Image (tube, rainbow, N blue to C red; front, side):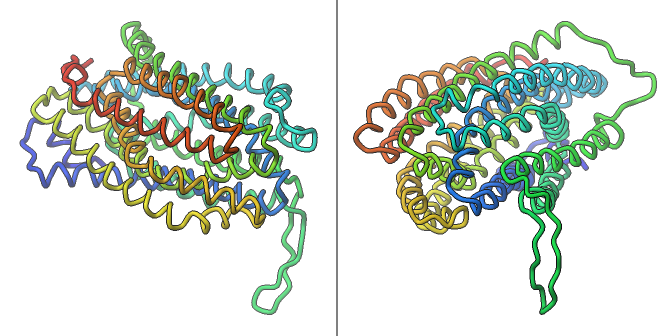
Length: 468
């Protein structure tokens, strides 16, 4: 079902301030719920694996940055198509948008298969290269292997959801992500733990289980994503009002669209590679600090993600709104909407940062029963809480700029902040402050990054681009 405010935006009708706010809220809430659901899945995996001890948790934490790298490159590949789809719909070129859907699915599937092959190879060497201890490398290899094999599933799920969102359908992908959380719990219960008996209302019940531990956590998540991918593709290709397949509309590869997709996606892909390699280097800096620090680092990253997911939800809404606004040539609203989304995000993430500071011990405690991990995780989360407002600014402005097709400058900003600020500071402070020094460096870097993105948003070049 289309959002009426987006229809009004595309057709040139005036939108009052209240209507602009309502449009942002209506589009962002489903996207925020979808982002939170993905974090809940991480919480589920981390909490379940955490019950098996620090080594099991550390094995996943060791390769977490590698999984982000592989997943982020896939996500970048889809952005080149989803941004164009939003702009084509805004311009009323729905037939061209449907053709681009077909091109995007085929091209990104091919890319994801290649990335999956690289991931399988990396799974054999990456845990050892990162400096993981022998007792965690075997499980880390298994986890990365399963994740890599499931990358095409993750890619199709992500791209189909992104295309539906860019058409204005934010609710259905969000519902599917929430359902995926429940499926993840179900599959994990069956795959992680061995068969056991539990007492419910005075009755003893046998719960079957495969006892696959870390391997089971990866497999459970892959099966949950596979289930949702099938439904998501069906809705996109058969039920979507704007983007479903039509008789007589055969696939046509359009070189200008593919080149524009590359122009938009390539900087994002390079940016994600740069950022994720920086995450890999951060992991390499943390790894010598021991299993407790590795596990605390991993759990804290998972815990923090719950606080910044509203930013990513608003960024998704921003990409759709700005993309369709530019496509509809609504220059009167583009910059105003960009700033309104940004200010709303900063306000929300100021609140979530305060919550993270106050609830840090509880957030880590949910993930692990280990006292040492809880204590260290609480400290680093409270350091990071101060960066949340400007971190939110960097997240949402990046989404706004992507909607305009402006991806090169944001990539340069991320490269500078990660490699010229975070990594050198982390290496410098880790030796004297341990994991707390790594997270202090992260806090400083995120503040620098957010400030630079706000400077970019203030400029006028990003909003003066021509639509597709």
